[in-house]
Each structure stands twice: as C-alpha cells, then as structure tokens.
Amino acid sequence: MTDWLSAHGGVHGQVAEGFEPVAQVFVDNFADRNETGASACVYVNGERVVNIWGGAANHKTNEPWREESAIVVFSTTKGATAICIARLVQEGKLDYDQTVATYWPEFAAAGKQDVTVGQLMSHQAGLISTDPPLSLDEILQVTPVVEALAAQAPLWEPGTDHGYHALTYGWLAGELVRRVDGRTIGQYFAEEVAGPLGLDFWIGLPEDQEWRVARLRGAPRPSGEALDLMRKIASPGTNGGRALTMDGAFAPIDGVDPFNTQPVRASEIPAANGVTNAASVARMYAATIGTVDGVRLLDEATVDKARAEQVFGPDQSLVLPTRFGYGFMLHCDELVLTQDGAFGHYGAGGSLGFADPATGMAFGYVMNQMGGGIASDPRAVALLQAAQACI
Image (cartoon, rainbow, N blue to C red; front, side, top):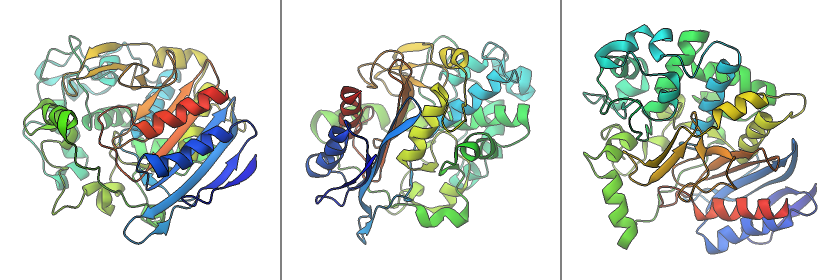
C-alpha cells in the first residue's frame, strides 16, 4: 500500500499497486458526481487494498473529512444487522425456517403465528410501520415500537408478497437478538462483531464518539421522471412513505433531518442509524467471506444460506423490483453490486457495503452528500465497478 494524495478534493489514504483506478474514480466523484465528503475502502481476500477519504465532513464549516470521520449510513446498517442474525443462526440460537413466535411468543398475535424468521428477514412480514403511528420520542425508546409490531396485524398475508421494511426491519430483527441472546442488538454487534474486528461502527452511537460524526447534506431536489418516481414511492400515505418515515415520524423538522441529531444517533435503529466509515464496512464484509487478522464472522455454509434468493420482483413499498436474501440485498438491475452471488446493502443517499465471494472482494463506501435516487447510487457504482475491473 502506498500513500495517495490528490490535489483535488483533499483526497488522502493508501492504495495498493494496481488499484489506482479506484482512487481516480473517487477523485472524479468530487469533480463530476457532486461529492462533498466521503470514504471508500476495498479488501481482497482479507487484505486491504484501498482505503481513501476526502472532501468536507461539514459543508457549512468546511471541516475536512479525516480518516476517523464517520457518518450515519442509513440502510447500509441492515447488512450489519443481517450479519448478527446470521451469526445466531450459525450458533444454533435461531433458525430461518422456524417461526418468529418460537422465540418471541407475543409476536403470534393478530394472525402472525406462522411468520418465519426467514420471512421476517426478507421483508415478507407485512409490518412496514406501526398502527397506530408512534411519535419520534416513542420510537427512540424502542420498546413501544417492538410492542406495537408484535400486537398488530400484517398489511398482507406474510409469505405471499414482499415490501421493504425500511425501518421496522431493524427493530424486528433486534428483538429476535434480544430474545435469544439477552443483549440488545447494539450490544451484541459491539461485542461480537465490531470489537473483535476493531471496527469504528456503532448501532447506537455513544456520546463520547459524537466528535467523529460528519454532517449529512440533503439530496438535490429531484425533477422530471425522478420526481414522478419519488412521488409514486414516498408520498404520504403510500406504503413507501409509511415505511421510509414511520408515518412521518422521521420527516425533517424545521428543515433539520432527524438523523443529523444526537438523540436519533444514540438510539438503536438497527435498520438505519449505524454510524461508521468505509474502512469498517469493508472490513466487516471481508470477515464474512474470509479471515481478517484471525477473525471470521460467518462460515461458508452460513454465507450461502444468508445470500440465497428469497424474494425477487415488484416491491410493495419501493414499487421497483427488489431482490433479497435473508436481510441482504442481492445483485439485480436496480440494486447493482458486482455480479450474481454478491450480497450486501445500499443505504439511503448512496452508501454501500457488500462482499463478492467469487472474487474475494469486500467493499465499503460512505458519504455525507445524499444522492437523490432510491436504489443504486452512481458514485458507489462507479467505485465498485472500478474495483472489480482492477481485480
């Protein structure tokens, strides 16, 4: 690995010989794709070959993005949550084919007695928001959300359709972790995943780590076809609008995104409020498909089980076709990874983490400038394709 320093955008980091095109694309993102501040990292067969960062951590103050900077990565958090569930399956504490109610008896209410863990993890449970809606303060306490989801009836017959559980996915999975392990998912992740790998990655950010957090910058307002699609997906009252905002609880208040606030970062929102950097995302995924400094999170059989396709087609929340394994997004036209067999998760605005067992590549990208798309982000796709070409 050699040091990389660009005169454009203040890009810093290390790049292994042969992977310079990835760093160049990262620089190009600032010039051509509206990047503000970001980091990107690539591992191949357990070895780090790219680790770069640059731009501004705060567009209002021009504070630079540093190696230790971190950002809320929205649904890229779901990959970390899926890894926690997969580890518990690997340990024999959970079974994807078993009913959720086996581990969480209250969940059987209102006709959900036959919902399996696998259906829950592949967005088939029909629980995209709480009914009735909860306030943000109630949501941040977590328990009111969990109790509401356990008590309510699903929007569709579970197992017959799928719709992105943009926020509820995390609390549903998190309660499974708590029921079978005793720890909250934030504690489990910290002690079983982040700790052994030395990750700067939190689900529920400690106050003493707030100094790391970069400031999110809102997406440019969409227009034309993009605006029409966004209205179709996320307008108030639509499944997408309900799922993405918890019926408006996470809508901006006086122009301030709640995810730019400390109370939201401090709560455990295992579908959306992970705070991390690209180096930690890539390292985590590298340890799912191989050994990283003596640590391996998942064995090959567990990976194969977790990345097996469970649903593929029009999404009841996002409208567009989506493809999922057990908690992981899978490669398709709308959710571009490298190729079939790769597994991971995009986050709102553009962040991405994934692994490709066929090439041994693990990838992480995080940023503070929100993109306007609902699926693959051009900055992430350009970087992952450059990395794939180098391999």
